[in-house]
Length: 117
Image (cartoon, rainbow, N blue to C red; front, side, top):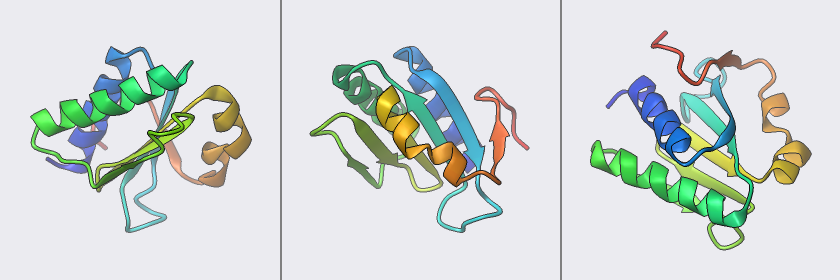
C-alpha cells in the first residue's frame, strides 16, 4: 500500500473513534524517513489508546503492520510508526506544549480527506 493510501486509512481509523483536530503534514521534501505525519488529539488516555489500537487494527486489515508503538503505558502521547506514515495521538495539553506542527512549520498541510497529490 502506498503512503497516500496509508495516510487515508489512518485518517479513517482516527475518525471512527472520534479523534479531534486531525492534521496531516506532508514531509516528503524534508526527510527520507517517512512521507506523512498525522497528528490527532484525544480527550483521555482511554481514547488515545483506543485510537492507537484502531489505527493498528485497521491498517493490519489492509496488510500494513506497524513498525512500533510508543507511549501506550502513559497514554498521554502515543506514536504509531507505520513506516511511511507516523501517527501522533496526543492529549490537548501535551499537543499544545510540544507543538509538532510548528516544528514542521515548512511542511505542506493537507486536509485529512485530501486526495493523492
